[in-house]
Structures are given as C-alpha cells and as structure tokens.
Image (cartoon, rainbow, N blue to C red; front, top):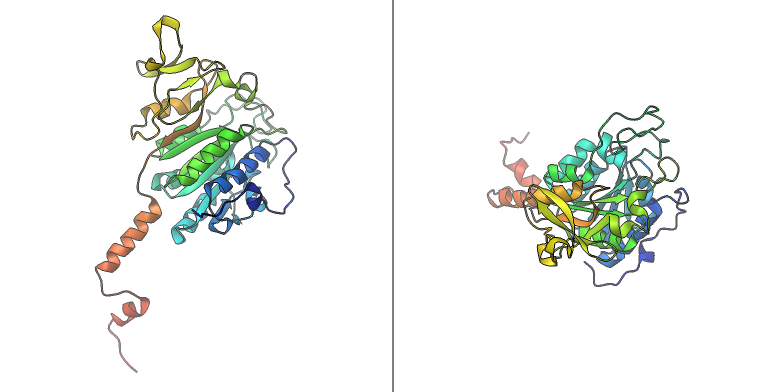
Length: 336
C-alpha cells in the first residue's frame, strides 16, 4: 500500500462510459473508483482484467493497467498476471454469464487455488450485452429471449459456488448501496487470496427490477442484513430483528418477543474455517429471510502465487543451478 492519499478521480479514465442510462454497473463503477482510492494502491500498481459482457468494459473506464480478454477467460489471464507479478493488485471484472457459464471452470479453479485476485461479479441475472438470454443465475421460470416459455434450469448461487470451491472470501453488495459496496471492495483488496464480491446490479433493458425486492429504499432495511465481523446479526428499520439457529437452520426472531435479547442473537464470524453458517447466510433469500450483504466469509490460507514462488525458492536453494547458463553447463557438451 502507498502512503500517498488518493481520491476516486485518480482512478477515472477519460473515456466516455458507454453503459445504458440507469444501468447498475454505473454504481458499481463509482464504488470501485472510491474503493481503489481508499485501499491506497497506486494506479500504476493495479491491473483490471475482464472477459466479455457489459461489466467487462470497466477496464476502459478506470485509469489503471487493463486487459479486455475473451469470453470467460478473464480468470486465466488474471491468474497469469498475478503469478508473474505478485506485487500487482489484480482485479477481475466479470458478469454472471462470463464468469459462471463459459468461464465457470476458470472461476472455480481460481477460487480453489486461492489466487490473490479480487473478483467483482456483476450479477444482473441475464445476458445483457448479447440481448437478453437467460444466464446461470436467472431465476427458474423466468421468460427471456432464449426461454420464451420460462427457463427450466435451477440457478447458481454465486456465494454457495464460491464456498463449495473452498473459497476464502465472499461478500455481497447492491449497486445503489455505495457505502456497503465500497466497504466490501476495500476488504476484498486487503484480503490475501481470491476475494469474490457479488454485486447485485440492475439491467434496465432486459431484466429491470431483478433485485427490486431488496433494492427498494423503503423496504431494504427489512429485507437485507448487513453483516459485520464480531457484531450481532441484527437488522430491520428499528434494528430489532436478528438471526438465531433453529436446529440446523437459521431463523428470524424479534428482540423482546418470547424473552429474546441481543445475547441470544448469533454473532457474525467471518474468520471461522467451518463454512456451515457462511453457507446458510449466502443462501438466505426472501420473503422469509433477509438477503445477506457485506463480508460473509474471510479466512486465511496460503495464496497460489506465494506457494509457487516459495516452491521455486526451495528448489533453487537445493541446487547449484541458479541460471539458464548454469543449466546448459550442467549437460555433457563437446567443442567442435
């Protein structure tokens, strides 16, 4: 991290932002600029890698190094970038189609390897750039251009997929909630390992209102819970609702009812290795349960690139061959 103080303008490029008016990616982009400034990493030490999709245009709009790759392959390029230059802060810009369909294999293995990447997964539950086909996160039964009678497929839940791939960091935020978005992106930047941030974004053209149930300003406090490490899992307009365990499930309770006090409410622990509660939290959905926002999981494990470089150093320490010339000289040779 640099001691220089940055502002979001330091990370804004001079390119015209070619996103639809009202697109949720605008909010996510603004949050990213603010988060990069707050994280304190110099623009020249940041690389944004993307695949194909609306979200994959973000490198053009950010004054850092960037690479707009091909469909679904952002994770592979980002892994190579970080492994070759571990000092870079590498961010992967991707969407629910780019990341979880054609890029799904790269995604789960980036997560499994724990490459020190920051994956921003823009989830609008639709293919927006290619005109409204259903994606791996589209709700079952939803009518799209490629499912005129409703899709029959069950959708992925990005948080569940991340944890299932042995992910060390998962967070969720909403495009219009800039404060929470910035907070989780900053925490993602600090995390050593693959950090996955699911940003719930709205596509005003092909899936308008996809997240309206939680995006409504009037009802958001009742329908979402912003989790913070070490704090009770409380939510609601009056902060009087909370989460408790009911056998193997979570349930919503109200303080003051049936003698329930704040001491009965679960305390959020992002750092526990046991993923059981984290899985329950990422899978919560309405109308009976609030949708979890904030950092849900953040555990420590060795990163992929650290393991690679440590292995190289260990092997080098055990051999007299230090350079390519040493390697060539170690073979039997003749002078002609």
